[in-house]
Image 1: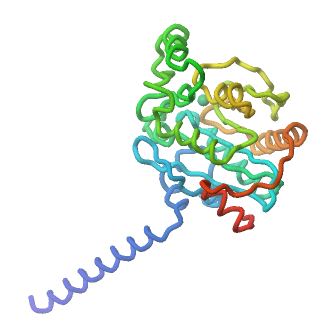
Image 2: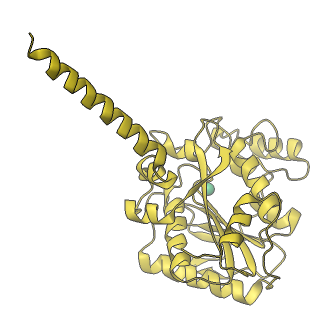
Image 3: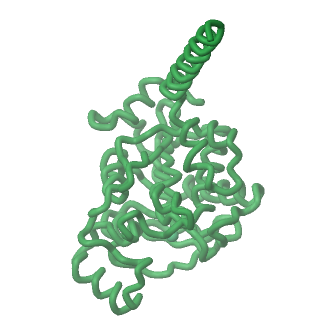
Length: 302
Ligand SMILES: [Zn+2]
């Protein structure tokens, strides 16, 4: 008995030190390491190293179930264009997040005079379901939740008559009712992008809304403008606000294009941007955009 007590005390101390060390590690780990061990692990063709190199940061926004919506800014000092890339607005379109992360890597490797803001997963709750789902945790199709004209009437008519009340396409109770769509709306106001690239799957086409000439192809995806939907991002941004939206519909929701194809799509996107988007004055940080202010202040490129 006498020689057992010190051993128990030693074990107790060891457990205490281990627990404190674990807590310290969790508290001091970069956020992206946690995310890359958690919900980003569901994304296909994204090795842990690629995810960590993306160095995603938490925005101020959380999903319905409290998951952070992550983003990453890339900018050279004096960047002359602002482009917002958003993916996996529909949680079951896993390949979309993967392409966003691969393009982020390409943007890191070859800096351009463009300020990129990447949001690889707008709908983390939909992605994290055991069987990933299109809608967010409230069952809302985020791509029908943006404030387009006559939203109450038009989304209702469309949902009831055109989709037959398809639960996968429910627009929600009111425009911007969801934290995820509200976040994107606010981010557009803060960042003032000249272009939005919205990545989806699995229709295998390129769609476009906006006041400029659309790209005719990105890699093997060809332009096929499928129409304007009430409450959609393309309608809200491209048609109503005049901010072009390139909607990339990948051919598969669970499988990414090959590396060569992703690189080709990226090159085609950049070439179209050079031809089409006017170059603007260097970006100035805005008082209410802490991310942008930080990037311009640091004047670094990873
Ligand atoms: Zn989609």
